[in-house]
Amino acid sequence: MKKNVYEYSVKDISGQEISLSNYKGKVLLIVNVASKCGFTPQYKGLEDLFEQYKGEVVVLGFPCNQFGQQEPGNAEEIKNFCSLTYDVKFPLFDKIEVNGKNTHPLYEFLKESKPGLLGTEAIKWNFTKFLVDKTGEVVKRYAPNDTPEKIKKEIAQYL
Image (cartoon, rainbow, N blue to C red; front, side, top):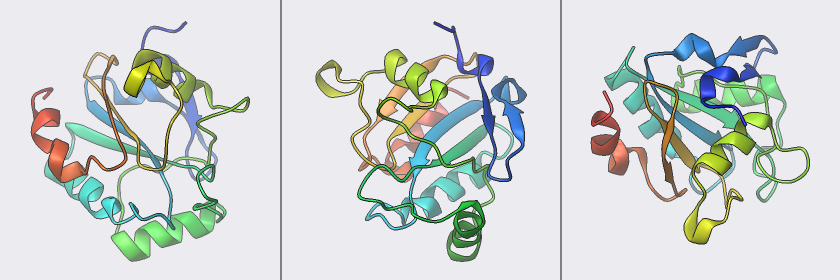
């Protein structure tokens, strides 16, 4: 198993391969996002967090359509929705799967590093969040209903 998130590459929402090592020295909040979910308004809090700690905390949004088909759009539609509805400027990535046989390798690593309640690794719903410290270690997993506003203080401890 790889040792930290910096050893992974992902495709951004425009299809460009990005190494997560580009984010070395920053605190990361990695979130599986969806445009048509009850938790979708969290985009605002995530963007506020990204803006407040600009350069220190980076929110990484990974669209996922595995929960109630709540992210049906293509990359362009997702980008437009996030930009026009929530003025999202934090990095968005290619739509991925976070559970099952086609789970993205980054999410395999995140789930193994920080299992959820009762040791289960599966992602339960959209807007599950993983906090990664400046060394690339996964330090915390948050439930979908843990809002960005609620976890801001904890995130600040890792700056």
